[in-house]
Length: 347
Image 1 (cartoon, rainbow, N blue to C red):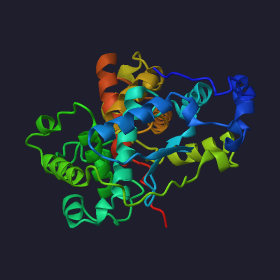
Image 2: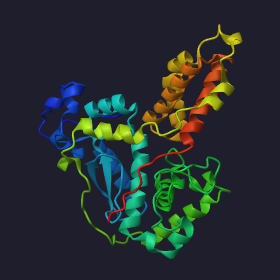
Image 3: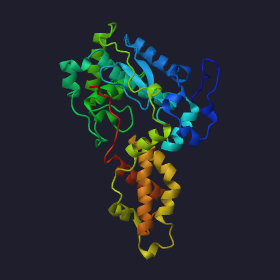
Image 4: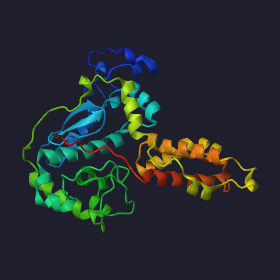
């Protein structure tokens, strides 16, 4: 459950009660946000406590930006601005259908992941031969997208979408997050997995830097919302473009396996009406399976609804079986290419 805090002077901002239309015209820097006045302060304090419990002197600094990231060369963590206020989270939910990191549990998982990047930067761990031998070349170009291998045991499973498979830097950050989490029992959880060796390497590396001061101590803030002249409307226009449908809009072969245009089924519900009714549930289920943002999953479903309408398709199976098969179909098309925001490489 998200808990709000009153600002330090007890005042409220006018935009808290503004309409979505008026709020969208506001510049990010004019929101006047401070994460220290919010529930995020407790989560950051928890992260620092977990690092201290592991003997690490690293304390990543935090600022509000437009998304989650930790820049290369800066041992800090950027948190999406909308998590700093309930009104902004409601807008994010309406615009993107979900709010990444809005629960205590999910927020901590993301913070531990970004702390992995921060630790790598703070101690220059990626320069160690053992790091490269274990995770791969740190300087490998980030892909615009990646095709996950759901059954692979070479990587830990922390964030959804098999994110450890995206890049060596993400593989390390995900492994670090699993190692850092209290009571994660990673030795038993990953027994028999090749990923266990990576966890043991991280455990050894963390032991080697325990109690030592960080080597990189920059407190720089990258792309802070406090200096952004972008409006919320522009922010969501860019976000929609980024996460919008980038998948084939024609699913004929797959749809004709699940549904039918045969007149024999003319008394059955239309596939378009069924998918329209099941859309929110399918979106949630596929989002949990794939880790893809709800907005992207929803675009895949909408494309399928439109094509089912054009082909005049109808159900051939029971609604429960159709729901399962349709969810699998949406998941397949969603995971053909998963898009993720990479760890920021600063030039």
